[in-house]
Length: 347
Image (cartoon, rainbow, N blue to C red; front, top):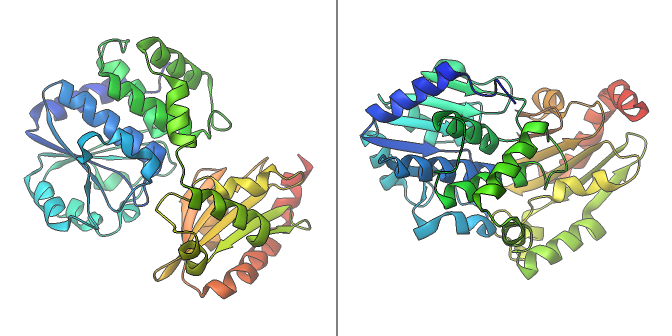
């Protein structure tokens, strides 16, 4: 657990925050639990220390995470472009969380690159884009960016978190809980220590689990059933499974952003499956989500075939082909990686 945050980095972070009059905190496109958890937690913490903060996301986030956005203060670029551009023009400090490349924020990338503000990146994904930032706090050994922010705040607070705001503690826990799939993956000893300290602080984990994992709409649950019954395809020869959801599928079940969260993990619950993919048709592209078990790197797989990147066991990307060609393309890519897949299945 020691060494997650270097003392020198914590000092540089504190000094940059103290100098700033307005801090903009942002995260990646299609924000998930860790993205919203980390930005709301850091904003809450900095505000409690007297700093003016604005939180920005490129596009809407899932409704089951809205309880972390008290007062609906998060600015959504796709809906509030002028307001977002204004806060970036006024910012003294920009803090980017939970993404490693500026292309992950779509058109918000231009606002960042054109800003004269100091820039900090804090993230847990491999190969961060260091040249775009004045300070990079990067660690791939933590479960989530929320855990990285936990250790940063703990370091700034002299080794304890008893004085941080309750909503900050809540957001940190939610971010960690969602990125580990409720402690199912990417968990280390430090993750459990974080959980222990946040529970000691007073967070109600049962209530948070119900809000996050039990707050779905009827349409989302029916979409999940449709995906498993009608859309999931299992390729036993590759130890792989995938789901393709078209725009029509989404429309038929009243899709809201975030409704497909967790769908990509479903094929991995089947015995013998080591690679899973979810392909979702969007305007102008196919959104790709990849997961794996054992020794197969979906990070490398995504970089090679899907214009993306991520972690070794969880990655994402984009395809620019018709949705009707996606299944055949995925199977072709699997065939090209047959040796690696076979080794993973033998583990």
